[in-house]
Length: 540
Image (cartoon, rainbow, N blue to C red):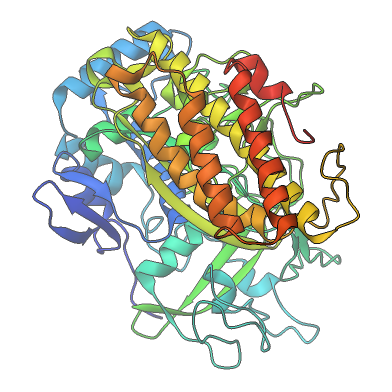
């Protein structure tokens, strides 16, 4: 049997210290030195997003004042008492080393934080070795490439991010394998997977991970200690949580979950943050225990998931009514375009993340927002992941001392979106007028969405970076009363001209350019109010 890989002390989490030094730490050192750490540096944003939830759950067990922990059940119905306790914990400035050691060494059962423990490997199910088998009873693993996000799977898989294929799999360092286990449990695909036989039935399909195709927003402080304490969701932030049984994270539970039984009720904060996985994973280590040579990845349950609100995502309400849904991640959408949803009180079409509620007033002026997103479809296709951090914007919340700035953010963002939509239409219009001579340039034109032409995408690629610069300029203190229309329209006109190209003698292109520019100029006569941003539109 391979040596273990104890996540308490093995160096597997990349961080950056206040002095600028980068290193890797284990869980123990991370919590001991959290006040010296300024950032996590995991190169896989979905893994960082999941890890933050795991660390927040551990923080709720470790962070205490006068013996009262942040996960104290007696405070579950006393939000004001809980907020006072959190402020007292923050005032301490660091985790107490003895509390960290007591949790890691005594409260968590032995071996449960070891990546390769024989009985209870961290976040894994050792039963898969005997349950994922072929018709002759031989092991039927999924392949190490299936574990690692970004690697192609199958013998004939496309080579996209590296020369990997299942015919000659490349082992993964144990530290990196831990990242991908976390990422798979939170963002894993739905649909076909490695079959798992528990009874006579051998299903080979599963559900998507709880965070699939979402973007998470976390309050981000100047040190990891403060970031983690603020990451612990307040009582009631995620909906109704059960108090009927002990709140246990997967690595704290004595027994493995029953794949065929009912799901345990959601409880605060451990199960809400770490107990919603829909996948089961098992790693096979190399003989020396320093890398992973094989992996199993399959379903963990087919029971309907409990309704719960993740505390780090924006929830949007469908315009036609219905249940709110997590705002999907979009790699082409810059973080500033979500700022108004993070700063405004909501109550309309969007609801800001619960983790951004009730933040200490003394910290707001310095708090930033870190976003981790994974652009995916709902099943198997992964597009790209991203990480971004705002400047200190939480001081501008609508319920703060400067509510007018939050409203200004909403006004500018919505007008930028309006101009972007109109630019998309104008560029498509110009392309059709310049390529189809039978179209009357003076008449109302109906565009075919299947034939956008090349100018729309080129114009958008130039407009949005320019719009971001305009957005931040308009939020400068000496520009907050300026009309947002002219600079956004100017940015759109410049993008349109760049997409169409230099002035040409072609009369049709010249007329098309003139008509498209008139569409954008028309916005100068429209108010930049919030209502207008949702009613003005596409076919001008």
